Image 1 (cartoon, rainbow, N blue to C red):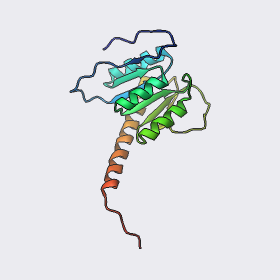
Image 2 (tube, rainbow, N blue to C red):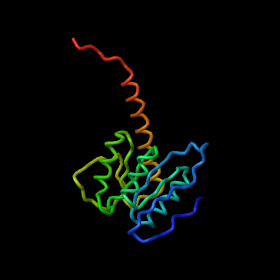
Image 3 (cartoon, helix red, strand yellow):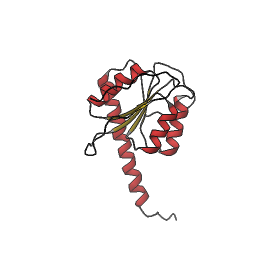
Image 4 (cartoon, rainbow, N blue to C red):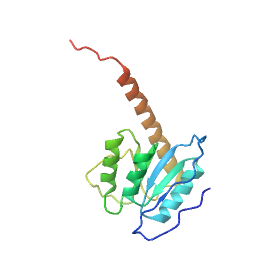
Length: 159
């Protein structure tokens, strides 16, 4: 397992990108959480389950990573610095509509936006968390396949 990210002051946004073998067929996940303890624990869980994880505590760094890499899912904590997770999710959705978005939060607040494919409590156990992630990724994959098929079909004339 790669070394965990080094802790630094909150003023400096960090991104942690582990080594990725070009032969690796693991699913790729972007994880955004400003709580480094949660971030480190869930990243270890995800990597143990075979996922390649890019982790950051900064919404801006998350958007930079999202613009450079292709992810199979994005996991966000509800409370993020400078922006709500709902707003960050909406920006991500404008770039890629079919990306599975998972929210992890103990908050029952609703920021008025509902882009989430799955909403999980911070107290969720690892098995439930991984099952929800697998389900969201599979649903997203099926949606992409259906959209590809639909876009390749000739238009049907309406009479």
